[in-house]
Length: 210
Image (cartoon, rainbow, N blue to C red; front, top):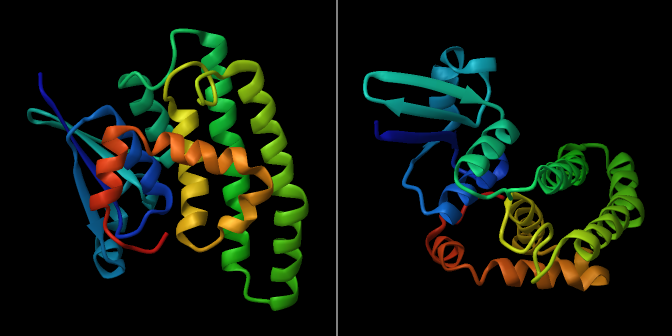
C-alpha cells in the first residue's frame, strides 16, 4: 500500500531540517507542514509528547504520528538506504549523528543564554573545547572508516547529512570562521552540496530562522 508522509514542524530549520534532508536526499515526496506558534499551541495536546517535529505516516485509512527528531531521521534513513549494509558501520553512523547532537546542544545553550557573562563562557567552551574535540573525532572516523569524501563508508549516509546540516547552519548564520581551523569540514559541506537532490533543495529552501 502506498504510504504518504507529513512532516510537522515550525517554519524554521531546527530539529526538522535533518528530516527534510533525508526526504530530499532519498527523493521521497512528503508534505512539509510548517506551523506558526499560534497554530502550534492549538494542536499541542494532540501531538505525542506534546513536541515537534512529528512525522505522520498515512497508509490508506490508517495514520500514525511519531515524535522525536533523531528517531524519525534514523528510521527514515534506514528505510531509504541512507545507512550501509554493515552493522558495524551503521553503529558508526549513529555514533556520528549523536556526536553532532552533542555539539548542537552547546550551540543551543549559547543561543538561549540570557546572561552575557554566562554566554561568553559557553561560547569560549564551544570554540576551545566542543568544536576542536568534535573535529578531531570526526577526522579520525573519516580517516579510518570513510572514503570518497564521505564520513562513514563510500556513499552519502545519515552521518554526512548530520555533519552537513550543522556546518551549513553555521555558515548560514555567518559563523563559518568557527570551522576554518578544520577546513575539511567546510570541504565536506561542499562535497555534500554536489548531490543533485540536495543542490535543488538548497535553491528552493525557504529562507527562515536556522
